[in-house]
Amino acid sequence: MKKLYRSRTEKMIFGVCGGIGEYFNVDPNVVRIGAILCGCAGFGLIAYFVCALIVPEQPVV
Image 1 (cartoon, rainbow, N blue to C red):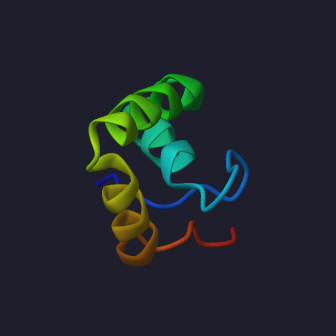
Image 2: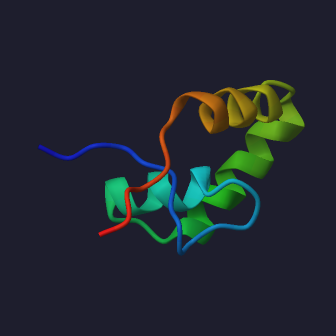
């Protein structure tokens, strides 16, 4: 079963967008653009920081 983690390798701030990109097998830059567009709508920034607090960091292998 797949689990959502914050990425250790594909990160700019907290690795949330990189982790979502790895989970859905999508380029993390596409997720980042979506996050920026949601941020302009007002709720994206809050959602990003909530995810940064809730989603665990990827374990070291």
